[in-house]
Image 1 (cartoon, each protein chain N blue to C red):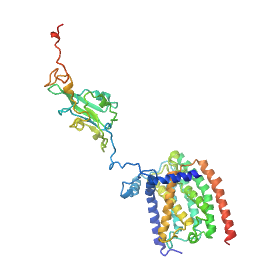
Image 2: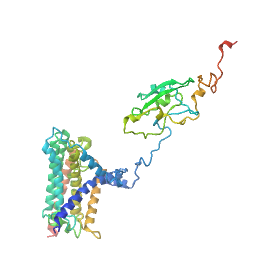
Image 3: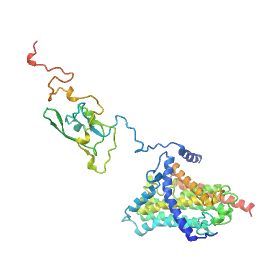
Image 4: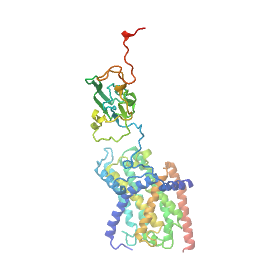
Length: 317
Length: 171
């Protein structure tokens, strides 16, 4: 199932993904405000919608400064990497029948690989800044992302076993009878937590931890380079929410409403859930974070794969 | 583990609670009558300036933001030649109001005095003087003080006995 107009799909997805990512900044601020009994930005434009535009203009007008002690080429490349890797993953995302850029047969592996590459952005950014807080943030990011990647991949193996394919389109089509959230509930929980950690969202925002590391890996960044990190993070959240919808909630499948709408509905539900997590949960200590990953999540993921594999082997051959 | 889920749920329930933010310019803040805000100079019931230029407010001011120069008119009545308050220094402590013996200087419930130019925060006498009496109605310093000014001799003030002539004091 290849898109009839690949170029149109490419441009459309690029524009929509970027606008959702930047619009998400507004959504997040409004939702956080709602849950903290405030209003949030509501002055610029209708409901404060133009706040993002105003912030972007401010960022663009800022001096594009590279600290004299920084490793200049790496410092400049680092923010671009996160944007590139996340946007690459959108290429394999099946949004609706016919709205997909490339239906790879290893789409899931491609997604995992690209999200792993994203860590380079953080580590290189932290390293090139030549600042102890940035370096600490980068080191934390590396440790955290490697730890959570291990069971992120494993948590999805149950889905792959049930669908019998790495292609995301096949995975969605395999959920016509029942969404994978039901047989793979543990896998969903694991992937959700790993997704939070992978996008460095609260409560797993230790790489940037404002209260202890100033801003972690992007302390030294300003202007649009900082903006790239920012939009990259929100693109990552959008991507993980979309992946959750595709892998566990049947992607575009759903009654009555058109497929595209179903996909967006599910995606925005998880975006809201991500923001709710940020609004409610405190940040753990770093050793707690690592212990949580290796001592609880990894064994759970392995057990999930084991049980799912056994069930598939016993009943669905 | 359960406590985490419960936290998330409790935070979600805040969606249905009233927001505590006051949309300030549209819903102005309530300021009690004794609010210590913008400083004014009031007038007595006859419309004359209450300030007698005693410098007590300038001395009481902990940040030295009040400057004035006293002078006298041809009737012997003291008044400030200039009276200047630098509101970029003022901390709105209200000591000047406490120190004032004539109820002239008063703090009002108004804080909306932002300026783009710092120099505009220096208020001169014409900016400070109001036409009314402020918080203390009916008080006229010159009418109760035993001071001789034009049109009022010694002993003609309210609740003041005529001065005793010491040479006429017989046992």
